[in-house]
Image (cartoon, rainbow, N blue to C red; front, side, top):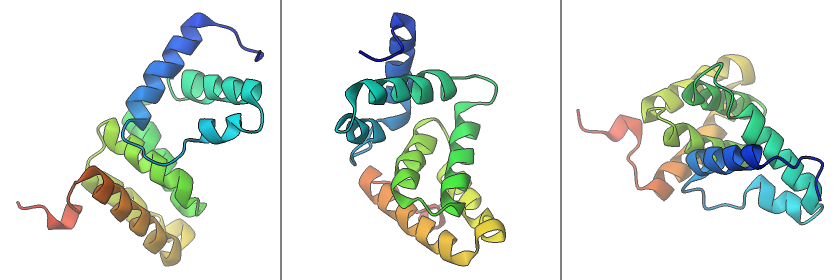
Length: 137
């Protein structure tokens, strides 16, 4: 059993996770963490998704665009993949996601931007969505 046992928090975690991560086809952090320690994985999921990601201080869209920016600069493609899906799931436009990634050349350099755009392209393909520059106007 994990340290956290709160029915309301479990429900919030499930709702937030379903909203953010629908359509993600890669293994989630939670699924991977469970292989090592089920109770700790549950507690981490409850905290990250049920507490941190469900806060309403900033919008879910802003929160996910921040995650995209950070993960781009930190060069974390696996996590970036998940959070690009999440950003689009909570209302970020394809153009906003691209802009946030391009903005990171100032902080992380063009190589991380190129890699992040490659991840973004894979996400768009999975979702069956066009690249922002290829949309008809």
